Image 1 (tube, one colour):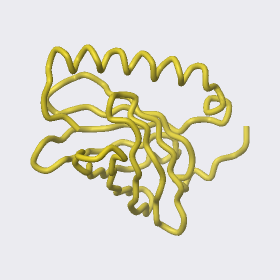
Image 2 (cartoon, rainbow, N blue to C red):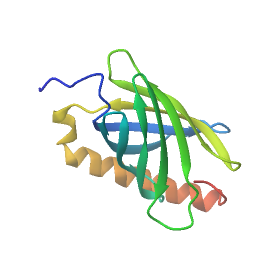
Image 3 (tube, rainbow, N blue to C red):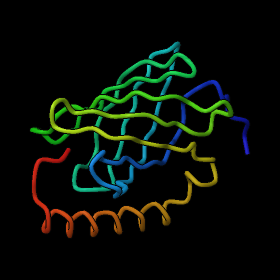
Length: 143
């Protein structure tokens, strides 16, 4: 495995976000590209929400970014968080004023894991099926 620059945010991250009013985890995969404190990249929500662009700032250990979905009509999501001392975990809070808020966590993906697309494809399929069921049971204004 190649050494990661643990003070850098750049790389692939898997994670979950949670609404403050529920315990259900919603999965995502993100790719962050950090250059001199500027952060860009994309996030794939493993739900019906799909892909989004991100842009923000990173001054270790602090991260702030905005997620804007490719699908029109979705509200922007504002994130803030911190990277752990070993550079492997991100944790923080998200907010869609005034619609909702919650917490999130992400873990750095090692090169071997990132190349295992079969596992990711199966996770995406499972999350999409779970989200379809959830939307049918509880429709409403979620991001």
